[in-house]
Image (cartoon, rainbow over all chains, first blue to last red; front, side, top):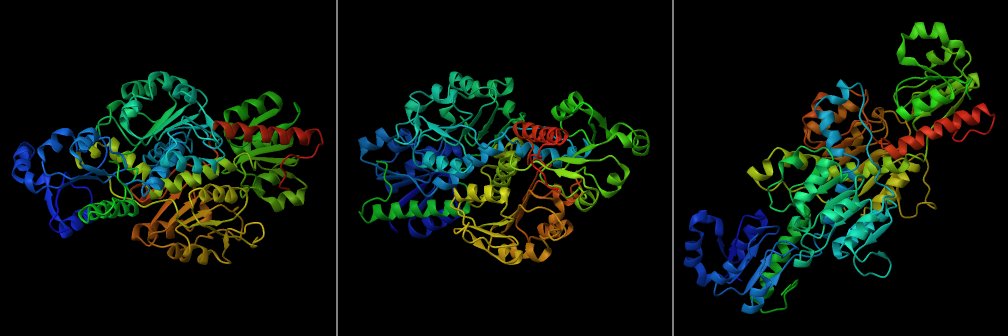
Length: 315
Length: 315
C-alpha cells in the first residue's frame, strides 16, 4: 500500500506512526499549525485516500473534514467508539469506516472493575493519605470505606465490554442486572429502574444519539448516596453538571470516571473530591492493546488497498 | 456479661467500644499509664480485646492473673502469644471469614491499580497534567497475567476465584499441595519457583515463625523487573529493606502494599515511587465488615461467659 495517501489527524502511537510511514504515504495533520490546517488540507486533498483517527470526543472525522477530501475512500479509527465520525456523510459518499473492537475489550473491562473497586474502597485517596504522611501523623488512623463484594452491579449496555465486565464481577459475588434484552440476566426496561436496584452502575454502552445523557439527574438520584457510578463509555452518556453537583452534595456516593464531556477538561469541583477516581481516558491504554489496535488499523488499510474484505468495518 | 471485665487495648472501632461499654465492664488500656492501670485493675481483667497491631504478648498475659480469653478484632493473631495462652489455659478467638471478601477485593484492587497505575493517573489528572501534557503513559494489561498466591487459605482462595474471572492462570505455594481440591491451579514447592512463574505475587498466608520474611530478596528477584508484589498479609512477611531497594533499582517491577513492618511507618523511599500503591492497612476496613467483626468479637465473649462453644476459636 505504498501509494496509499494516509492522513493521520494527531499523534496516536509511535509504532503505528512508524508503520504508516514505512508502508504508506503518510501525511501528518499536525505538521501544519492550527490556523493553517485548512490550507494544508487543500494542498493535499487529491492525494489523501485514507484518514486515521483516534477516539474520544473531538477525535475528528466530521462532515467538514470528509467534505474537504474528495478522494477519501476510508476512515480507519484507532478506537472502538466511532461517534466522532459522521457516518451519514460517509454512507452518502461511499466512504468505508473501520474501528478496533475486541482487542481492547479486556483492558476496558479491567479498568471498569478496577474503578468499581477503587472508588468505594477509596484506594487512590488512601494512597495519597499515606504519601502525605497522614497515616503516621494521625497515629495509625484511617476512616472506613464501603464494601465492593456482593454489591448489585447494573450494567448499561451488554455488548462486548458490558459482558466482559459482567463476567469479572461475578467472581466477586456481585449479582448483575442490566438494561438490555438478554436471556440469562435480570432485565430492567429503564435506566432509572436499573439504577434503583443497583449499588454500582457501569456505563458500557456504545455512543449513539439515543444514549446521550442516558445517566440523567433522575438516574443519579435513584443510584443514591451509597451508589457508585463507573463510566468507561463516553462523557456524553452522563449529564456531567448534574453528576458533579450530586457528588459534591453527597446525593451520589462516589464515581470512577475514565471519560468526560470534553476531554481533557475535568471540572475543578471533581478534582477536589475524595469520593471519585479520575482517569485520563486510558481504558485501552496498555502496551499490549495499543499494539493490537495499531495492527488492526494497518490490517484494515491493507485489506482496503488490496480490495479485500475489511476486517472490522462499521460502514 | 455485665460482670465481665474486658480490657480494650486500643480504640479500634467505635461501635465495638460502645457495645463493650454497654454490655461489659470495660477498661480502656490507653487511658492511663500501663503500670498504674495494671496496679489498679489487673485482677479484674478476664478478657482482652486487641487487633492486628495490638495484641496480648507474654508480658501482658503474665500481668493479668484472671485472664480467661483473648478475643482479637482481626483474623491474624501473630501478636498474641499463643504458647503462653495454651500454658495458662486462656482461650483465643479471631475474626475469620467475615473479612475474607474485603481483603480479597483489596488484593485484586491493588493488583489492577498497580498494573494500570490508577492512583498515579488520578494524581496526573488532579495536577492538571492531562490538559497540559496530553495522554497518560501506556501501562500493562491485567487480564491474563499469571497470579501466584502464597497461602491458599480462605483469603487466598477468594483471590484465586476473583482473578480467574480475568483469565489469570493461578498458581500457589503452601505447605501441602492439594491437587484434588484445586485441579486448575499449579502448585510450586518453593516460593522462589512460584515467584519465577508469576507476574503478580500475592501474600495471603498467616504470619508465624516459618513465614517471617517468606518474601526474601531471592523471591523478589525471581518475580523480577516486570513482576508485582501484592501484600495483604503482614509487613513482616516481606524483607522490607530489601523490597525498597529492589523497587528503587528496578529489580522488582512494582508493589501494592496494605501492610508494613512497623505500621504506621512507611519507608520514606516508597513515598516518592510511582510504581507502588500504598494503603494504610485497610484490608478489612469497610463499614460492613468492621461491624461484622465487632459482632463476632462480642459473640465470642458472650459464648465464653455463658460457657457455650466459642464461635471462632484459635486456641
